[in-house]
Image (tube, rainbow, N blue to C red; front, side, top):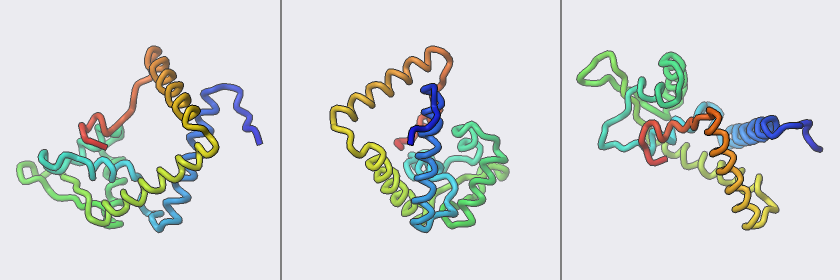
Length: 162
């Protein structure tokens, strides 16, 4: 069934929502329904630990959300045992966030799910078509940046190796 998407922008939105729904359904089926945002865990897992655990405020800035919004996401992750928060020794008002072993295992599971969904999404595409699609996506990204579309990659803002 063809979605009623007359414009590329609408089709991107529909595809994004369908992808997000598939990810959430499969994460839930894997027993990680309480996870919330896997991207926060991915960033924490790949954070350069030589800099110490990031501050809650740094995470909020990286994701372009308010500190209160990040606090709620982290509270859910902390309740689930995926992260732990500690008070900064230098500044008692500052909370540092670190991923736990359970959080690392959840990231591994999520990455397997993401890869599987991507394989399903591209099922039937030849290697040449996949390369062509990637080239088109990069060109579209470059074009949209010229008219004010900004990249929103928290991993880059946090300078981690996600």
